[in-house]
Image 1 (cartoon, rainbow, N blue to C red):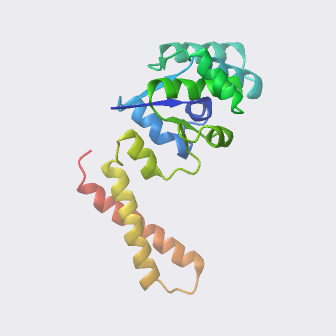
Image 2: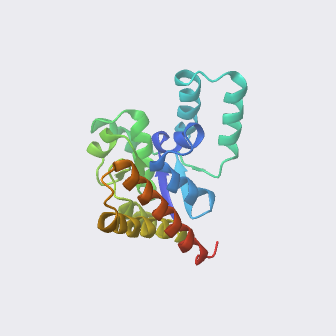
Length: 195
């Protein structure tokens, strides 16, 4: 099990864009207990604020969100105010500095999609938009599951087959044949993977 601080740019999509590629793996690890999420109380306030102000959620959905947040297994940590002040002096807002201070206090990475936080706190922050997933897995000490490996391996094999053998002189036919090949290879691969 690994620990990380996640900011609102990472956790927010779990509630309003649950299939966003960048954060899906982290959410899966959190839900399975492989990742402990730490955050300042500010995270809850930011998520409710974005849902209400930016997405115009009504009172009932906002109350439901607040309830889900309070029932979450997030480890809430108050940042040291002097550490927040240090990061504000380095160019972060007090809000962003709160996340960095918590990560620094706990000695764990802060994962965000906020480029400014990376620029100001590079030693603490992992920027998810550009971080190779291997770097994220290394930090969290997790690896792709068997289904992901089968999918990627079948994709690579299907690509090789299509590139070598499919010369139909029609993009549509070649693309369709590639997709069918990938689908068949993936299904065959999944037969050998225990779920």
